[in-house]
Image (cartoon, rainbow, N blue to C red; front, top):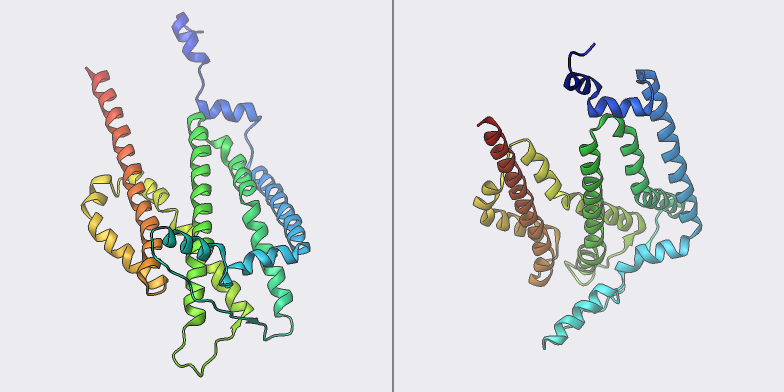
Length: 294
């Protein structure tokens, strides 16, 4: 029996993580966790299949959206022309028409299935993240759960921004340059549907990953591998490297280079801001520890 009321109170306190597990019921065995994981995967697969079937049925709308960047009247080109004309520069993109072809009997059908599955996974990604969070949440502290929601939302938002960056800026401008580039006027470009979709998906998901730079910086900062002062020190070098990367993945014109360079460099500055916040929080924790030791 406890010797004092304080000891009785302490004996009633439980570890936050233990209390979370008790609220969920008895602790699961390894086989129990596998069963929950199996059910979770089945739910995710079922949602993806349903979305893929729905997307497959809306063939016209889906491919109108995907093939829009191949046209010279794409909204990005019109908007850029409007902006430049507003500042007194009478600029117009050269009109072009690059037809897509299919060279295999089943190519269009298989491309339709592949596109439906990829878009289904993309649309289901919020649900997939939610299911994964529900799977690991019993092992998290209450404070960790709160921050996990925030981190998951930031990761998803940055990924979507990367997709939009590729769809509206990077891919249409790159396609316009590469599809119309000629080493000789006698050579005509004929782009296959597989090549178009492959380049589109690769570039789009690549930009989604590139936009995770602040998240990577946060993780490395928490591990103590980098800090804000380090990124500030090499800020000029980073800008040059980003510009070189942008020059490689974009057509050789200054306007496109600027369109891609500044958003990517903005991610670098956002990473510095995130790391500076980590440093401030760590300093506040250290001050609290020093005061408690007095």
